[in-house]
Image (cartoon, rainbow, N blue to C red):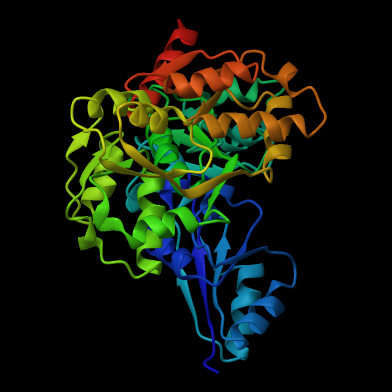
Length: 477
């Protein structure tokens, strides 16, 4: 058996989008991810379906050696920069002694990231500790009160008028930066900056701080994403780019339906259909997967015209070389009916590869037009209740500001799994906004007793993000 390998990956600061590209690649290739509990949980979501995820603890070197000897590819995901000190050094030394190869991928420096997100320029190496000079002169990790730290600096010759900034929760949506003169810090009777998670930065009093991060449109907003981890990643990244924090906790997961007889029979006679109508990206992906599994030549669709519910679905088809003939202007089933009504002919065979729980409206309307419709369940949408306790805790602690739902199933299964907890979770929704894509999702939310504050139109992720931004800005005004 070939020996395994270990890669130490520095996760960097808490912001998940600051993970290095090389670190991201290592996570995707991993069989096992051994992670620090301080690491942002979103770094583990959707990284590698095959990877087993294990929280690190004292004595992890034994786990690393055992797994590596079993031929596993292991990522040791370290909070911060992955510097080989303390526990990390012991783990690496144990690997070295066992002649197990390891690699170190450093993370983005917290010092650099925190000061950058705070809009405070760092000094050149020559200026690093030049007391009394212009520029940023000193950066400390706080391990005592700010008042005591400021007093000690004045005693060592720093001017009482030197501006000093305390940064907490750097790079995160609740980042705080407070700037005062050293003399003012000394006179503070109490302060909340005594944790080691704060930086104390002496900065040039002639330069203004660049508040680029705090000025982002939804800074300070925590948004729940209920899509599957894979689909939710793009939405989460866009939320982060707007200054918010996405908490991705899927309320659904997608599986191949137990019975694929209808779909398989349709694939066996694929060249008999005049139309193939796709109602989602998921439908496209599961359809193509089954096509490959059944070894059906995609060219057997040559007779069929193709319709898609929206541009994202059309783009998924275009990736495999399928030209879409019709794209609905309204990205729901009703929009497809409107688009297809003047085009389909009585007696034409229409294939609908879609969700097993999809509404009956579309096939019913096509049959009314005289079409012979094969409604083929291509994937099934099931509730995912693994994150229900975490959602309830976040709501109870008032840690969520906006809930997002992108389909009727995400909101129905959200309510269903929350109801199963047996606590009055709806009482925690005071002040929490709800944003939905389209009227179908919004109606499902209202049927579940939720007040919908924003319906994205057009029915796209970008429109949903615009709605979230408007909700936040309306609150601020």
